[in-house]
Amino acid sequence: MSTESVPAELLHVREQIDRIDHGLVLLLANRFALTQRVGVLKAQHGLDALDPERESRKLAEIRRLCESHGVAPDLMAEILARVMAEVVKNHKAIRDALGSEG
Image 1: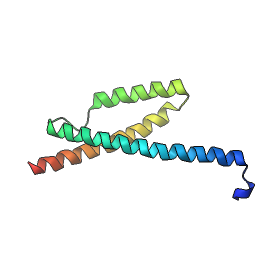
Image 2 (image 1 turned 90 degrees about the vertical axis):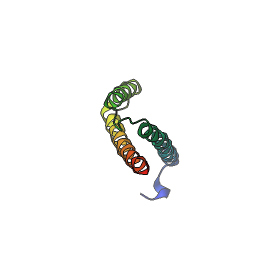
Image 3 (image 1 turned 120 degrees about the horizontal axis):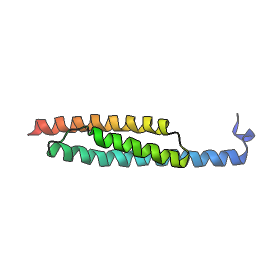
Image 4 (image 1 turned 180 degrees about the horizontal axis):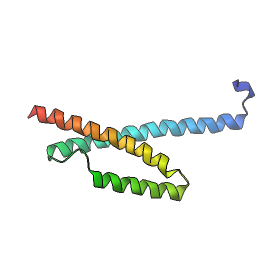
C-alpha cells in the first residue's frame, strides 16, 4: 500500500501509535534503570535476585489493572513476566559482579 493511497486519518493514527511505541521503549528503559539500582541494593544486602512473592503480587495487580482497562490480562502478564525474568537475570549478573569485587 503506497503512502498516497493511505487515508490521512490512518496515517495520523499510525503516527500516534509510533509515538506510543517510542514512549513504551523509554518507559522500559527507565524501568530497567530502576531495577538496576534494585539489583545493586539486593546484592549489597545479600538478598535473593528473585522475589517470588513480589512477582506474584505484581502479576496479580497487573491482571486486575488490565481487566479494568479492557486490556488482555494474559498478554500483559506474559509481557511483564518476560520483563521480570530479564530483571532477575540482570540481578544475578550484578550479584556475581559485585561478589567478585569483594
